[in-house]
Figure 1 (cartoon, rainbow, N blue to C red):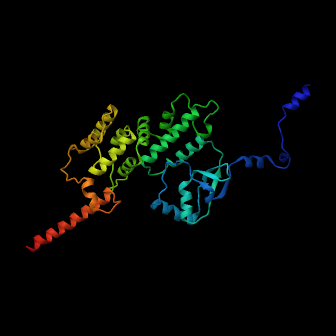
Figure 2 (figure 1 turned 30 degrees about the vertical axis):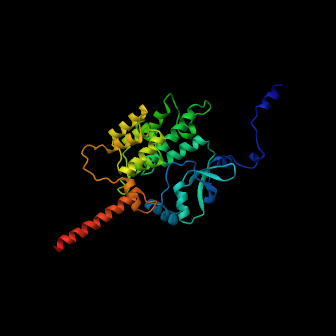
Amino acid sequence: MKEKEEKMHLPKVSIDDFFTSQEERDAQKLEKVQKISITEISNFPNHPFKVRDDEKMFETVESIKEHGVLVPAIVRPKEDGTYEMVSGHRRKRACELAQIEELPCIVRNLTDDEATVIMVDSNLQREQILPSERAFAYKMKLDAMKRQGQRNDLTCDRVGHKLDGKKSVEILADEVNDSVTQIKRYIRLTELIPELLQFVDNHYLRDKENMTMALAPAIEISYLSKNEQDMLLEAMETSLATPSTPQAKRLREESEKGTLTEEKIQDILDEEKPNQKEQVKFTYDKVKNYFPKGYTVQQMQNVIEKLLQKYQLQWQNKQYER
Protein backbone atom coordinates (compact mmCIF):
# COMPACT_ATOMS: atom_id res chain seq x y z
CA MET A 1 0.00 0.00 0.00
CA LYS A 2 2.81 2.35 0.89
CA GLU A 3 4.53 1.63 -2.42
CA LYS A 4 1.33 2.54 -4.31
CA GLU A 5 1.05 5.87 -2.46
CA GLU A 6 4.67 6.75 -3.31
CA LYS A 7 4.09 5.92 -6.98
CA MET A 8 1.07 8.20 -7.06
CA HIS A 9 3.24 11.18 -6.08
CA LEU A 10 5.99 10.58 -8.63
CA PRO A 11 6.44 13.51 -11.08
CA LYS A 12 5.13 12.95 -14.58
CA VAL A 13 7.82 12.54 -17.21
CA SER A 14 7.22 12.97 -20.93
CA ILE A 15 8.99 10.89 -23.60
CA ASP A 16 10.83 14.06 -24.71
CA ASP A 17 12.55 14.27 -21.32
CA PHE A 18 14.59 11.16 -22.21
CA PHE A 19 16.00 12.79 -25.36
CA THR A 20 16.55 16.43 -24.28
CA SER A 21 18.80 18.03 -21.69
CA GLN A 22 17.54 20.16 -18.81
CA GLU A 23 19.05 23.23 -20.48
CA GLU A 24 17.11 22.55 -23.67
CA ARG A 25 13.87 22.08 -21.76
CA ASP A 26 14.45 25.35 -19.87
CA ALA A 27 15.16 27.18 -23.13
CA GLN A 28 11.86 25.98 -24.56
CA LYS A 29 10.06 27.71 -21.70
CA LEU A 30 11.73 31.07 -22.41
CA GLU A 31 10.08 33.63 -24.67
CA LYS A 32 11.57 33.61 -28.14
CA VAL A 33 11.67 36.32 -30.79
CA GLN A 34 10.04 35.32 -34.05
CA LYS A 35 9.31 37.22 -37.23
CA ILE A 36 5.61 37.68 -37.98
CA SER A 37 3.99 39.17 -41.06
CA ILE A 38 2.60 42.60 -40.21
CA THR A 39 -0.58 41.66 -42.08
CA GLU A 40 -1.25 39.08 -39.37
CA ILE A 41 -1.03 41.62 -36.53
CA SER A 42 -4.12 43.65 -35.65
CA ASN A 43 -4.01 46.77 -33.49
CA PHE A 44 -4.92 46.74 -29.82
CA PRO A 45 -8.68 47.43 -29.38
CA ASN A 46 -9.37 51.11 -28.54
CA HIS A 47 -5.66 51.87 -28.56
CA PRO A 48 -5.49 55.32 -26.90
CA PHE A 49 -2.15 56.40 -28.35
CA LYS A 50 -2.18 57.96 -31.81
CA VAL A 51 0.32 56.66 -34.38
CA ARG A 52 1.27 59.77 -36.36
CA ASP A 53 3.24 59.96 -39.59
CA ASP A 54 5.30 62.83 -38.21
CA GLU A 55 8.99 63.68 -38.25
CA LYS A 56 9.83 61.19 -35.51
CA MET A 57 8.03 58.44 -37.42
CA PHE A 58 10.12 59.04 -40.53
CA GLU A 59 13.27 59.06 -38.38
CA THR A 60 12.20 55.63 -37.13
CA VAL A 61 11.61 54.49 -40.71
CA GLU A 62 15.14 55.50 -41.73
CA SER A 63 16.60 53.81 -38.65
CA ILE A 64 14.75 50.58 -39.43
CA LYS A 65 15.90 50.65 -43.03
CA GLU A 66 19.50 50.97 -41.87
CA HIS A 67 19.60 48.84 -38.73
CA GLY A 68 16.37 46.83 -38.70
CA VAL A 69 13.96 46.66 -35.77
CA LEU A 70 16.21 46.56 -32.71
CA VAL A 71 13.50 46.09 -30.06
CA PRO A 72 10.95 43.34 -30.78
CA ALA A 73 7.25 44.09 -30.43
CA ILE A 74 5.02 42.20 -28.00
CA VAL A 75 1.96 40.47 -29.40
CA ARG A 76 -0.54 37.97 -28.07
CA PRO A 77 -2.12 35.12 -30.02
CA LYS A 78 -5.77 35.29 -31.15
CA GLU A 79 -8.16 32.38 -31.55
CA ASP A 80 -8.13 32.67 -35.36
CA GLY A 81 -4.38 32.09 -35.54
CA THR A 82 -3.41 35.74 -36.02
CA TYR A 83 -1.98 38.11 -33.43
CA GLU A 84 -2.94 41.26 -31.55
CA MET A 85 -0.42 44.03 -30.97
CA VAL A 86 0.31 44.85 -27.33
CA SER A 87 3.47 46.95 -27.59
CA GLY A 88 4.93 48.11 -30.90
CA HIS A 89 2.28 49.98 -32.90
CA ARG A 90 4.77 52.63 -34.07
CA ARG A 91 7.32 49.99 -35.08
CA LYS A 92 4.64 48.19 -37.07
CA ARG A 93 3.68 51.41 -38.87
CA ALA A 94 7.35 52.21 -39.55
CA CYS A 95 7.77 48.76 -41.14
CA GLU A 96 4.75 49.45 -43.35
CA LEU A 97 6.28 52.75 -44.51
CA ALA A 98 9.66 51.09 -45.02
CA GLN A 99 7.96 48.29 -47.02
CA ILE A 100 9.24 45.65 -44.62
CA GLU A 101 6.81 42.75 -44.46
CA GLU A 102 7.82 41.10 -41.18
CA LEU A 103 8.23 42.40 -37.65
CA PRO A 104 10.29 40.67 -34.93
CA CYS A 105 7.90 39.88 -32.07
CA ILE A 106 7.68 38.19 -28.71
CA VAL A 107 4.49 36.13 -28.55
CA ARG A 108 3.07 36.22 -25.04
CA ASN A 109 -0.12 34.69 -23.70
CA LEU A 110 -1.84 37.50 -21.80
CA THR A 111 -5.26 38.17 -20.37
CA ASP A 112 -7.09 41.31 -21.49
CA ASP A 113 -6.12 43.14 -18.30
CA GLU A 114 -2.46 42.05 -18.43
CA ALA A 115 -2.25 43.17 -22.06
CA THR A 116 -3.84 46.53 -21.21
CA VAL A 117 -1.34 47.26 -18.44
CA ILE A 118 1.65 46.38 -20.62
CA MET A 119 0.27 48.40 -23.55
CA VAL A 120 -0.20 51.51 -21.41
CA ASP A 121 3.13 51.20 -19.58
CA SER A 122 5.12 50.78 -22.79
CA ASN A 123 3.54 53.86 -24.39
CA LEU A 124 3.77 56.16 -21.38
CA GLN A 125 7.52 56.26 -22.06
CA ARG A 126 6.97 58.45 -25.13
CA GLU A 127 8.42 61.96 -25.12
CA GLN A 128 5.17 63.64 -26.15
CA ILE A 129 1.79 62.42 -24.91
CA LEU A 130 -1.38 64.34 -25.73
CA PRO A 131 -3.92 65.01 -22.96
CA SER A 132 -6.46 62.78 -24.74
CA GLU A 133 -3.93 59.92 -24.93
CA ARG A 134 -2.99 60.24 -21.27
CA ALA A 135 -6.67 60.45 -20.26
CA PHE A 136 -7.77 57.23 -21.95
CA ALA A 137 -4.52 55.43 -21.05
CA TYR A 138 -4.96 56.22 -17.34
CA LYS A 139 -8.61 55.14 -17.48
CA MET A 140 -7.86 51.85 -19.26
CA LYS A 141 -5.05 50.91 -16.89
CA LEU A 142 -6.98 51.92 -13.77
CA ASP A 143 -10.00 49.87 -14.86
CA ALA A 144 -7.74 46.86 -15.50
CA MET A 145 -6.07 47.24 -12.10
CA LYS A 146 -9.44 47.45 -10.35
CA ARG A 147 -10.60 44.26 -12.02
CA GLN A 148 -7.39 42.52 -11.03
CA GLY A 149 -7.84 43.66 -7.43
CA GLN A 150 -11.29 42.10 -7.34
CA ARG A 151 -9.91 38.67 -8.28
CA ASN A 152 -8.81 36.52 -5.36
CA ASP A 153 -6.77 34.23 -7.61
CA LEU A 154 -4.61 36.97 -9.12
CA THR A 155 -1.36 38.02 -7.44
CA CYS A 156 -0.55 40.65 -10.10
CA ASP A 157 3.05 39.44 -10.29
CA ARG A 158 2.91 39.29 -14.10
CA VAL A 159 2.00 42.93 -14.46
CA GLY A 160 4.37 44.19 -11.84
CA HIS A 161 2.31 45.25 -8.83
CA LYS A 162 0.47 44.01 -5.75
CA LEU A 163 -2.40 45.85 -4.12
CA ASP A 164 -1.03 45.62 -0.53
CA GLY A 165 -4.07 47.46 0.84
CA LYS A 166 -3.61 50.50 -1.40
CA LYS A 167 -6.30 51.79 -3.69
CA SER A 168 -5.71 51.12 -7.38
CA VAL A 169 -5.53 54.84 -8.18
CA GLU A 170 -2.81 55.30 -5.52
CA ILE A 171 -0.77 52.47 -7.03
CA LEU A 172 -1.21 53.98 -10.48
CA ALA A 173 -0.06 57.36 -9.17
CA ASP A 174 3.13 55.78 -7.82
CA GLU A 175 3.79 53.95 -11.09
CA VAL A 176 3.27 56.88 -13.46
CA ASN A 177 4.79 59.49 -11.12
CA ASP A 178 1.65 61.62 -11.12
CA SER A 179 -0.68 62.71 -8.31
CA VAL A 180 -3.98 60.99 -7.59
CA THR A 181 -5.76 64.30 -8.15
CA GLN A 182 -4.14 64.84 -11.53
CA ILE A 183 -4.95 61.30 -12.65
CA LYS A 184 -8.61 61.85 -11.78
CA ARG A 185 -8.56 65.19 -13.65
CA TYR A 186 -7.20 63.54 -16.78
CA ILE A 187 -9.74 60.72 -16.59
CA ARG A 188 -12.53 63.33 -16.48
CA LEU A 189 -11.48 64.36 -20.00
CA THR A 190 -12.75 61.02 -21.33
CA GLU A 191 -16.28 62.36 -20.71
CA LEU A 192 -15.81 65.08 -23.35
CA ILE A 193 -17.21 64.69 -26.84
CA PRO A 194 -14.37 64.14 -29.38
CA GLU A 195 -14.54 67.66 -30.84
CA LEU A 196 -14.08 69.35 -27.47
CA LEU A 197 -11.34 66.93 -26.48
CA GLN A 198 -9.52 67.82 -29.70
CA PHE A 199 -9.50 71.47 -28.58
CA VAL A 200 -7.63 70.38 -25.43
CA ASP A 201 -5.04 68.57 -27.55
CA ASN A 202 -4.75 71.68 -29.75
CA HIS A 203 -4.00 73.76 -26.66
CA TYR A 204 -1.27 71.33 -25.59
CA LEU A 205 0.24 71.48 -29.09
CA ARG A 206 -0.01 75.30 -29.12
CA ASP A 207 -1.95 75.06 -32.35
CA LYS A 208 -2.53 78.61 -33.64
CA GLU A 209 -4.58 77.53 -36.64
CA ASN A 210 -7.43 75.83 -34.77
CA MET A 211 -9.60 76.43 -31.73
CA THR A 212 -8.02 75.53 -28.39
CA MET A 213 -9.20 75.02 -24.81
CA ALA A 214 -7.17 74.79 -21.62
CA LEU A 215 -7.31 71.83 -19.26
CA ALA A 216 -9.07 73.54 -16.33
CA PRO A 217 -12.21 74.72 -18.19
CA ALA A 218 -12.30 71.43 -20.12
CA ILE A 219 -12.58 69.49 -16.86
CA GLU A 220 -15.53 71.62 -15.76
CA ILE A 221 -17.23 71.14 -19.13
CA SER A 222 -16.79 67.36 -18.88
CA TYR A 223 -19.61 67.37 -16.32
CA LEU A 224 -22.09 68.60 -18.93
CA SER A 225 -24.29 66.06 -20.69
CA LYS A 226 -23.41 65.05 -24.25
CA ASN A 227 -26.34 67.07 -25.57
CA GLU A 228 -25.22 70.15 -23.61
CA GLN A 229 -21.68 69.70 -24.93
CA ASP A 230 -23.03 69.59 -28.48
CA MET A 231 -24.85 72.88 -27.86
CA LEU A 232 -21.72 74.40 -26.37
CA LEU A 233 -19.63 73.29 -29.36
CA GLU A 234 -22.03 74.99 -31.75
CA ALA A 235 -21.98 78.17 -29.68
CA MET A 236 -18.18 78.14 -29.54
CA GLU A 237 -17.91 77.77 -33.30
CA THR A 238 -20.45 80.54 -33.83
CA SER A 239 -18.73 82.93 -31.43
CA LEU A 240 -15.19 81.80 -32.25
CA ALA A 241 -14.60 81.75 -28.50
CA THR A 242 -13.86 79.18 -25.82
CA PRO A 243 -14.97 79.50 -22.20
CA SER A 244 -12.62 80.64 -19.48
CA THR A 245 -12.45 78.63 -16.26
CA PRO A 246 -14.98 80.89 -14.44
CA GLN A 247 -17.33 80.66 -17.44
CA ALA A 248 -16.95 76.87 -17.56
CA LYS A 249 -17.81 76.67 -13.87
CA ARG A 250 -20.96 78.69 -14.50
CA LEU A 251 -21.89 76.37 -17.34
CA ARG A 252 -21.48 73.39 -15.00
CA GLU A 253 -23.56 75.09 -12.30
CA GLU A 254 -26.39 75.80 -14.74
CA SER A 255 -26.20 72.21 -15.98
CA GLU A 256 -26.44 70.79 -12.46
CA LYS A 257 -29.50 73.00 -11.82
CA GLY A 258 -31.07 71.81 -15.07
CA THR A 259 -31.27 75.36 -16.44
CA LEU A 260 -28.59 75.24 -19.14
CA THR A 261 -30.12 76.23 -22.48
CA GLU A 262 -28.71 77.36 -25.83
CA GLU A 263 -29.49 80.97 -24.91
CA LYS A 264 -27.79 80.65 -21.53
CA ILE A 265 -24.69 79.10 -23.12
CA GLN A 266 -24.48 81.94 -25.65
CA ASP A 267 -24.96 84.59 -22.95
CA ILE A 268 -22.14 83.12 -20.86
CA LEU A 269 -19.77 82.89 -23.83
CA ASP A 270 -20.56 86.47 -24.88
CA GLU A 271 -19.55 87.85 -21.49
CA GLU A 272 -16.37 89.88 -21.64
CA LYS A 273 -13.47 88.07 -20.02
CA PRO A 274 -10.99 89.87 -17.75
CA ASN A 275 -8.30 91.70 -19.76
CA GLN A 276 -10.16 90.79 -22.95
CA LYS A 277 -9.69 93.20 -25.81
CA GLU A 278 -12.71 94.50 -27.67
CA GLN A 279 -13.60 92.15 -30.51
CA VAL A 280 -15.53 92.27 -33.74
CA LYS A 281 -17.63 89.10 -34.09
CA PHE A 282 -19.44 87.59 -37.06
CA THR A 283 -22.12 85.03 -36.38
CA TYR A 284 -21.99 81.85 -38.43
CA ASP A 285 -25.51 82.33 -39.83
CA LYS A 286 -24.63 85.76 -41.21
CA VAL A 287 -21.52 84.74 -43.13
CA LYS A 288 -22.05 81.08 -44.09
CA ASN A 289 -23.81 81.94 -47.36
CA TYR A 290 -20.67 83.69 -48.63
CA PHE A 291 -18.59 80.50 -48.50
CA PRO A 292 -18.66 77.13 -50.28
CA LYS A 293 -20.75 74.47 -48.58
CA GLY A 294 -18.74 72.41 -46.12
CA TYR A 295 -16.34 75.20 -45.12
CA THR A 296 -15.39 75.02 -41.44
CA VAL A 297 -15.45 78.05 -39.17
CA GLN A 298 -11.67 78.10 -39.14
CA GLN A 299 -11.52 78.10 -42.96
CA MET A 300 -13.98 81.00 -43.05
CA GLN A 301 -11.87 82.92 -40.56
CA ASN A 302 -8.73 82.35 -42.64
CA VAL A 303 -10.44 83.67 -45.77
CA ILE A 304 -11.78 86.74 -43.95
CA GLU A 305 -8.31 87.54 -42.60
CA LYS A 306 -6.78 87.30 -46.08
CA LEU A 307 -9.49 89.53 -47.56
CA LEU A 308 -8.91 92.10 -44.82
CA GLN A 309 -5.17 92.03 -45.49
CA LYS A 310 -5.85 92.59 -49.19
CA TYR A 311 -8.24 95.44 -48.37
CA GLN A 312 -5.63 97.03 -46.10
CA LEU A 313 -3.01 96.88 -48.83
CA GLN A 314 -5.37 98.45 -51.37
CA TRP A 315 -6.28 101.21 -48.91
CA GLN A 316 -2.63 101.94 -48.21
CA ASN A 317 -1.88 102.16 -51.94
CA LYS A 318 -4.73 104.63 -52.43
CA GLN A 319 -3.42 106.73 -49.56
CA TYR A 320 0.04 106.71 -51.11
CA GLU A 321 -1.31 107.80 -54.51
CA ARG A 322 -2.95 110.83 -52.92
